[in-house]
Length: 558
Image 1 (cartoon, rainbow, N blue to C red):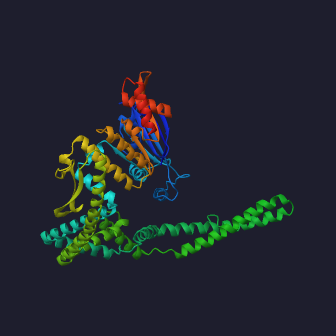
Image 2 (image 1 turned 90 degrees about the vertical axis):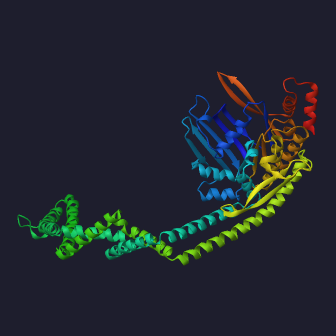
């Protein structure tokens, strides 16, 4: 659940830290006080888009952090562990910073994260239902998505879309192959001789990069063989065979060590330098052996050098032709071979047609499963929403979900999902977008959201003035629905209705203050007495009478 929300320099909020409790919490206040700003701030922390407009006037950035408590064995905990965002003691912290230039940064448990990952984490934590959700229900894609989510069919719907895409690609490939068979044959022929040239160079091996480096090293050694032989011979002459003065350095060291050892018998102070020089003599003797082995192994090998020059030139020429680096020729060869394989497949119209049919069969199987799941879920959801409509002052109203078969298969399955409604008894069912008035749409939308929320797995539900357009007895029913939902989840609701606020376990008042030439939003948790005052304000407006206060107290007591 949401445990703490910290806001800094967001719109008209300068500094605010709120601690939340389980159950149903109502946020109330005058219009324009900033009730929805709190929801907007939380939405930002959960990954909604943010721009420079959210930064409080005169500030460098806006900073919002939302702290949630999660169970150690929850799906989110596993997701965090997989992404190295480990939760500390069951706490998950989502943070968002937006600077005055509109640039945004996101963090999960203090670790920088892409915005897409922040949104993925948020999907485990909270659902936000705003006023515009009612309007979104008029769109066909929103109706289809809501039904699929309610039925747990979203993964299957995603599989159907992927299967449809595969079928479409194979279908297009089949058509292209039939349309441009001659062009494909010419490309296959060109690829064949390119692959032959690369095979002749021997670049197909998996160790081609190492081979190319070894080839260049061998070439460098052979091309400088004369210099290497001469240099090693000169070093041996100085060390062991006599230099310009005809006395080898090792011989001189041997004489020097013998003399110092004799003198060390007279003065022990010479023992250490004599030992060090003797050690150097041993190292030089090993160097002489290594130089002699190296010199004896060297050979000018002019024929081998010529062969290497020719092969390196051929490789460089082929790399230039393929427009890649020489060490990338093996990878390029794999790409050419893969393309030739594709063309071979395209050349086989029968095999391509068979693959297209198999892909279509797979799509039909998955889409059939999706249709069956939608049919079962549509009947259940329709019955639940129809029952809720009776409680929301729409007696005799009906809600149904039509699954209209499409003339052609689509990425979304065989059918279109259409929400149908009859707002009153005796009326014929018609599409929701065509018959619902503003008030009816609000009530139907709220019924759908509350029912859908009960099927959701997220622990925190947020409703931002979804009760606009209702009042009286219906408002009290809405309050009871949210109260009931609050027994199962953490529910936050921004409301202007006292009937809804009175049903909350907790109530916060949002006010607006002015000072130092600026406007600030403030939030206060209300005591029972203060709740009576706030409910009386919501009931009575400017003038609050004792009768209004008594009515507010009765509402709260009930």
